[in-house]
Image 1 (tube, rainbow, N blue to C red):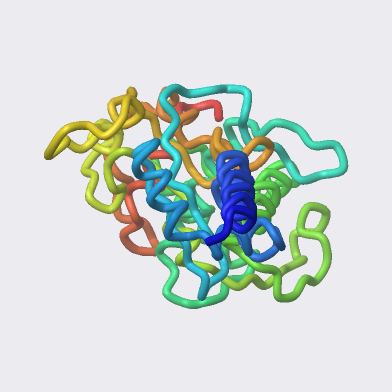
Image 2: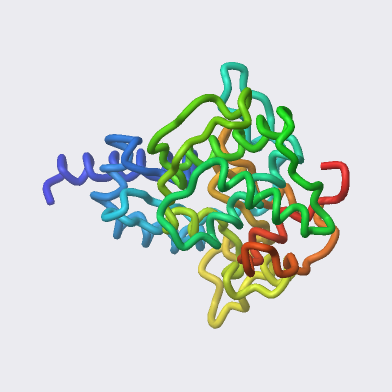
Length: 274
């Protein structure tokens, strides 16, 4: 590699690092930024692993890259915001609905789901849960649900196929979404794999190193985050913001839709008054 081409590659890699630190969930909609990550995927994966102890998942076939960034400390300044003309920070209610919606999607075997079907399943789950206020199709609740769904659309977990009316103003309105289950599976970044965790405490427990710690970052205090997290300014909020609001670490009981993935359920079990 010539000196000029080496300098160009170094410049592109540095830009890709900055992009991933600012937007840990990246997809084709990012254009050249995403192309840079794809082109230097192997180098970037080694760099983040060696320097930060973080895994970088690059799925070119499905069109996304996910930096599993686990910050050393939590921040309340980078929460999710609504995608409206006047963006506002997510309320606790919106966070809890976001977690329940993600649980519903993770328990869905079909590649598509309608908004009304989603709302009915959210209502069924929250009616069965002791620690989550039951969802009812009042206008304020419909607005909160749409804000949660819109955030997942922004993250690429859901893609709009068709819309009919405005659900926030009309309970009979509907929309159809494609579900990207692979991207959904990469939203949570935590020290312990969510699918193997048995409690919130277990999820937050860093794995015991099998050898020397590679860097000071790998030994940093554990927090968890999601594709919305403190990692993406003005995107989804960090799941770690919710940990302090949990009343217990038990998964939700059997719901009307079947057993839900516990990692999403823990995040939804907020105290009364969400």
